[in-house]
Amino acid sequence: MNFTRTAAAVLLLALSAGAHATENGLTTAAAGAEGFLAGALPPAGLYGLVYVNHYSADRFNDGDGNRLIPGFKVRANAVVGRLVYMSDTSVLGGQLGAYGVLPLVDLQVEAGGARSSHTGLGDLEAGPLVAWHHSPQLHTAAALVGVLPTGDYDKNRLANTGSHITTLRGVYVASYLGESVDASTKLTYSINQKNSATDYRSGQYLHADWNLGWRVAPTWQIGLQGYLIHQTTDDRQAGATVGDGLRTRVFAAGPAVRWQGAPTSPSLEMRVLKESGARHHSSGTSLWLKAVFPL
Image (cartoon, rainbow, N blue to C red):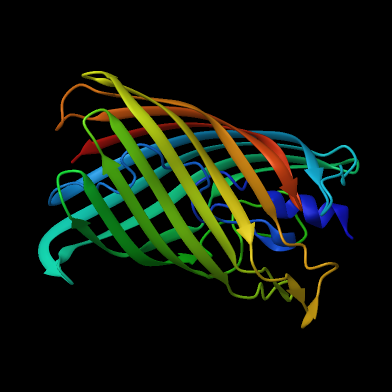
């Protein structure tokens, strides 16, 4: 296996959707970005969301969970902008909307004595969605979106902020909001196209964010949150399976807190998630900050 190429693929699994390459089994999903009220889409209008993420890891594991890449380090910071538009149009009994996401990423990678850093735009994710409000407590939404290769990419560079692939992604979110309990999840399934620069096609994968939160004061919530990434098909290059398929898997969990002064005012969230059980994946820690505000 080419250690340098494996490290280059890392590009930060935990940053915003579409920010990173996926070769060698890693993902472009925004693992850990969503938590509280993940399935509760807002009323009609235009909304802005800003995410800030810091991810760091000093270990990349093989398929047995052993340290694979000598001298491996990755550090990434991202500022991610998301626009969400919800209309008054009804589709399939739900509320039609759309969203777009574009990150700015600063990335540093070390592997096997090689070092690389790069700052640039990541890949754009966008598509339509439909939201359903089944009751005051139960809310769901579904989307079919594309991740487009708009980010910076050079196959000879260790650190890239774009993936050079197109990904089709199905998204489902749900929230049960009780008087004091928030149980929420975001599920995605991603199908990657081939990277034409390397003749490499990453496998399909399932990603899930989850939250179990409690309201401890009128304006404050705390929660236990995390994510799972599980690759379901093999990586392939030039039509052949790469190694043992390089199916990536990782879990993460950690504490979270949310503040919102009033139901219609901006909200702020913070979560710290520690990864474990990594297979063909880096093992690190991700810090997320999230702000939501009407425009």
